Length: 463
Image (tube, rainbow, N blue to C red; front, top):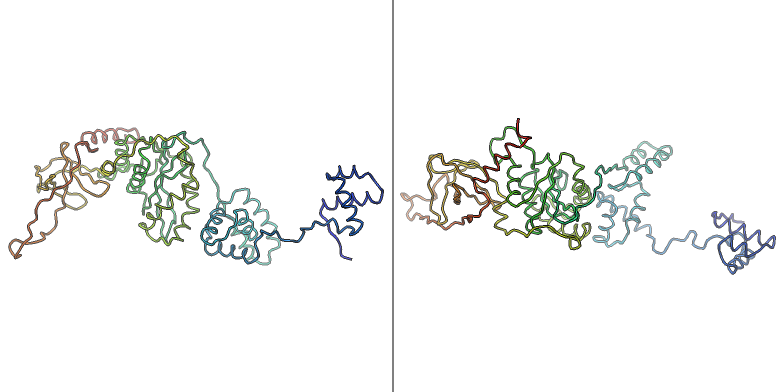
């Protein structure tokens, strides 16, 4: 006769009905004890009399649920994670299975399948890590080889979140946290991702890849914010980045990135607040944790191999990312000021450099000589030693400002294109009209000089 094994609840029902039948007890008391109806008590008595103890075995025991994965699908999910999506967290992996592989599996199902193989999520919590460690201590004793033990131990991924939580800002645009993160985002070399995150909504307002943490990267990020949303009230940044870090022996103003970025923000009316404590800007730090868990895999699946492709990919990815994770901007009051026009953005996000006219009526900048020209394309001559300011606009165009007058800059070629003495029909170069910014341009030399003096007298810059 086959041995019948019951669970604790099933065994409790069996013993109660057995005692009721053998002693002729009170059915009402038994129904109250088992929390069921008298009709069901009669049903169990009849089943006990016909089948005995085996009647109390639940009918679904040993039967797989209808919605469970078969062994082939479970193995496919496991193989896909180990070979193609190995750097995805479980929630992201569930989304990728649905989008790319047409496999519908909830994050919980994915977690159960992978945890059976001791595969932890890159976002595993401390409690999960402790449970796995406790299991590994037992598994180590039963391991058949050192190789098997090492494989189990290598499955643990320790991730800790050291950033304290604080209330979000009340309004969108009230404070944007900006930072850059060095990581293996794509390819074999590390690159820097610059982002701006709105503290109120958690939305990524701008993002840009560059080979280093540069003024160019933050200018591109800020340009996206200004173009798509408007002028924010304040930027909260890291004091150890280009916003605040100042070399002691800076040879020229254009290398002082804090002055360049700070002056651009002052022209737009944006406050800059800095902090040397990374935990103070936990919103952007947590955002990098999420992006480092998701974005490299997305870039790899998209075949991204260089900076140009990566920045192009960001345009569509950030929209999808914000739609999934950010709070809706429409439900939060916005304090962004009206978006400035493209011309103002181009002229404001510039690099300003002091230069003097040489004895050839030219200005030398980045090992190249330039000559000032007016709006009609005719050269303008100043005596040697005249001080002015070279402006490199965001789009790369060059200008020269002297006494509040602005001129365009044309590079002086090393050699003439044609010779009037030896060419049969030398090409006569005619002056062409040039764009000159209006008088309300943001680089008035007197204002910039006052800003430089103010920076020089800041407490941290005084010896």
